[in-house]
Length: 214
Ligand SMILES: [Zn+2]
Ligand SMILES: [Zn+2]
Image (cartoon, rainbow, N blue to C red; front, side, top):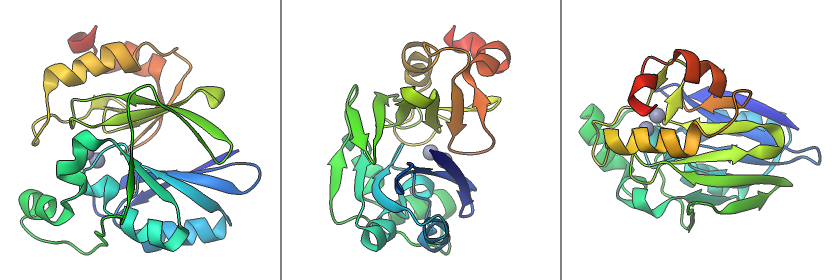
């Protein structure tokens, strides 16, 4: 089992390519640079079967259409983020007032995620934890066998996701933290949507926002 972190596009969004021992894999998040991600897929010789999107912000989802077409992988995202996932160009205009270089194709078909769902993909079993707050449909992916949480824009090393964008909610984000994230053990490795990895224990002890959820 191998996890490749691929920071991509102008927001330095982390895509994680998870590769199983038999060469199948899944991708957590799809920044709008399918070419770059494609070179890593080719180098590692992975048959990508699924794209798991933590949420619908364009820096995490914009590359899904291009990658789905290139790999034949199925895209999974929570339907509460459809107002974002299905409208990448509107997001770009609203957030940047322009359309920066990138690929923003919406996948032809997408599967809906829901809380508590267990996905068995590429020999890997991940549990979906719906964690609204940063966006209404944000999900974290809990890979219990390896003790890894893909936290998207919910939790970062030393920070948390912003909740001032459309559909965001501070109370929801802190509730998600309390009920879905901080219930995990200290040793759990957290792989966030931006920046470097951390652990649940480190964030529980030192995150500057910890007083808001405890
Ligand atoms: Zn986001
Ligand atoms: Zn992000």
